[in-house]
Each structure stands twice: as C-alpha cells, then as structure tokens.
Amino acid sequence: MTHAQDHDPFPRAYGPRVLEHLRAPRGVGTLESPDATGSAGSRTCGDLVVMHAHLRDGRIVEARFQAFGCPATIASAAEIVRRLPRMTIVEAAALGHEWIAEHLELPPHKRGCSEVAADALHNLLEDWVGSGLPLRPDGREGTYGFLVAMSGGVDSSVAALRLKETGRPVTGVTFRLWADPTCSVSSGCCSPETVRSARRTAHHLGLPHLTVDLTDRFFDEVVEHFVAEYAAGRTPNPCVSCNSVLRFDALIELADRLGASHVATGHYARMMGRPPRLHRGVDVDKDQSYVLSRVDPHLLERVVFPLGDLVKSDVRRLARQAGLEAHDAEESQEICFIPDDDYRRFLADRLGRRVGAIVDGRGVILGSHDGTFRFTIGQRKGLGISSPEPLYVTAIGAADGTVVVGTRDDLRVTEVRLGHVVEHRERGRGPLTAQLRSSGGVVAVEIGSDTHDPVLKLATHGLGVALGQTGVVYEADAVLLAGSIEGTR
Image (tube, rainbow, N blue to C red; front, side, top):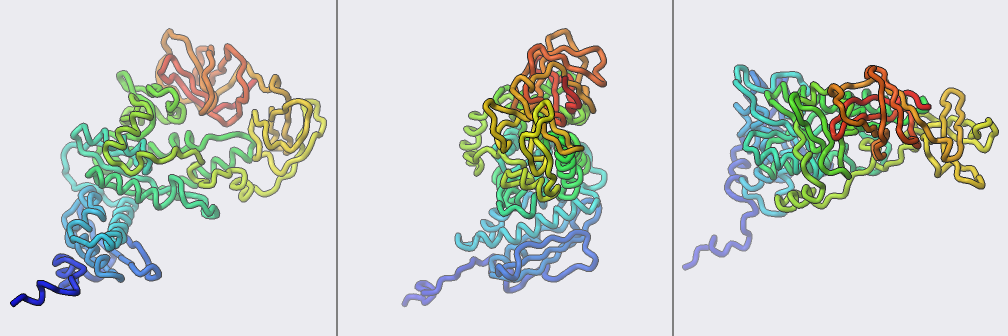
C-alpha cells in the first residue's frame, strides 16, 4: 500500500529550515534603546522587516527583529538575527540575501523575499557605521587588508576582484550620496539600486560589503560648491571636488576605524615610486589622474589603483570571465547627483531666472539670456543668437550678468594662473605638460620656480580654458602639481 505522502497533491512550498523558524521563531521582538536599527520594505508592498541590535566592543551582543509578510521574508529575518550575536561588523557584512535564500532552500519564486531581510540587516550596519561606535573588537592586532570603494560599475567591481586575488582580506564599501530628488530618472551612481548592485557584486565575490551614508556631507561639500561656482560665473568639476574634499577622506576614515591598511578605487591611475606618487594610468583614453590630482598626496600614499595597468577592454574581459553583473554596463556619463544629466535645469531650479545681456567684445548687445550659469567658456551651441561667423563664449560676468562672445581666436590664451595648489612631488629635469580640462589634450608648459602660486606659460595657445576648472602639470606621466584655474591671459 502506498503512503499518502508519497503522492502529496500539495507539496510543501518551504523546506524544514523555514518551517522551523515559523514554528518556533527566535529573536522576535524589539530591544530597549538599541545601538543600531535597520528596516526595509513596507506594509504597502507586503513585506516589512525591522532589526535592532545592541553593540559592545565592536561586536553585536544581541539582536531582535520584527517581520510582516510572507513566510520566506519572516524566516530570512529570523535566520539572520540568529547568526548575528558575537559577529563583528565585517562578519555580518558578509551575509547576503542569496546565501540566506540558499541556506533556507527557498523556492526560486521566493528567493527575492530574502533581499528585504538582507536590506534591513545592511541598513542596520549602515546605522552602526554612522553611530560612531567602535567597528572592530578592542585589542585586535594588525590590519585585515583592503577597503575598496564599489559603485556597482564594472571598474570598481574588477578592482575588488583583483584585490581578492591577492589573498588578503577585502571589504567593499559603497557611499550613499545625495541625488536630485526632483529628477524622475532613478538610475545613476547615487541611486538605491546602485547600492544593492554593489552589494550583490561584493557577495558574489565572497566579500563583505558596507554602506556609508554621506548624503549630508556630499550635499554640503560638493553640491553646494557646484551651485556656488556656477553662480559666480565659473565652471567647476564636481568629480574633482568630491575626490579632493570628501571621497578619499571618508575612505581613509572608515579604513582606520576598521583597521584596514589600504584603500582602493576603480580609477585608471597608478601610484609609483617611494613614497608612492600619482601617475597616469596605462590606458591613455581612460586615464583619471586628472580627477585625482587635487587629493592630498599623503592620503594617496595609502591608496592602490588595481586598474592602473589595465586597458578598458581587459577590464570588461575580466568581468565577463568572473560572471560579474556589470560586465556589459554602459559607461556613466552624467553628473552623478543629476541623473537626467540636465545640469542647466538643476541650476535653474536653485538659482532662478537671472536675465542678462549677451554682448560682443565691444559691448554691443547681441541678445539676452536667463542666467550666466547656462554658459561656460568655449561654448558655441545654445547661445540663442545668429551671426555670419561662429561665435563662442569668451567671458562670463556673473556680477553684472553679462556673457561675452567672440571668435575662436578670442578664446586663445597663453598663460594660466593656478590657485589652491596641491604639490605632489619635486620637479625633476624633464619637460612639463599641462592638462586644463578633464577631457582636454595636453600642452607643453613652462612654470617659474614658485610652485605655490604658479603661472603656466603655454607653448601653444590654449582654447576654452575656463575659470574653476582644474589645471594639472605633469612631468612625463607623473603628476607634479594641480590647482584651480584662477586666471588666464
């Protein structure tokens, strides 16, 4: 006689581990005065998880959860909380939703439920980082390796991959940054999905992953500066600003709290020499030493750039071979906090309509505009005026609202004065070149002996050199100095 269970017309949707959590859940409830809290999901979407933890001496000593939703979500939260006591933040950061789903033997259509519970955990860890409480056990000896910045893109993913191959411990970190809340586009490197993508990649590589909330600092130090510079008739580079005043300081700060000896990013650049100093990357088309040039060189001594000796095609090949989800991702071109890449709309929302005149070099009015922030030196398109010959923006007078236009010859400059200079190394005997825009070519230059307030004398005329941009002086591939462009002639 055949037993009924051998032909069960209603097979169980969940395995024994899920059922165990549902029959006798452990860790359910709340904690009084928790040191860290994380939540994810919502009652509206049907799944909600809240986690609380008490912390002591760099470890989780107690954890509780509340969960509403399907059995898979509840069991995932229970399984995570069961494992947390005695864990360090790095150990807890290695817990990902795919591992939880596999451990609980969740059916394929329920595996996504574990991501809600994992999000709650990682939001709790993010709260721990922001609390200022210790991130490693007291008395821990030595350092555990690398802290790598991960944006969810192919470059930072392969940087993490290459660091893992060294055999030293690696932890990924993603910064949560401010993004324009009025923009309907939800993609971009500041979006919540970017954080999840970076975390998935880290866990795919078997690495722990942390998120750090830099929203307020990013807005105050990068976004506000961006707006103020355009309001002053200048043309800032927000990537240069972010790297020099925020990103690398934050990386080193977190590394020190975790006990990491070095930090890493996916930039195409190299650190060479003793002490190590910034050099161009091997891939001349992707070299990013320009946007790194105003970072304090003493901070850069603790930075490694795993992609510095690679070209982009090699990076994509390594990503495909490793099965990384970002291997075929398109290049990000927009300003990270303006996902729709319409910076004029963004500035207009903040600066309003500021009517002014467009004039030629003699002061003759040729037209009008709604704000000097809509223009940059060298701009030709979008001037709103007609002329028998091409006209370019040659000067911006933010004080009186005047935009001056002229011919291509009027754009030529032979001298560039730098300010707020960062010196990377002593000058050698080789010839010098300068890069005056992030996407611009290089020009041979001469500078005087005073590198604190240098004037660059260009061997050939420079075109479209804008105040507020960065000028970088190189000796061969080595960065000699960099500063903001404060004047031209």
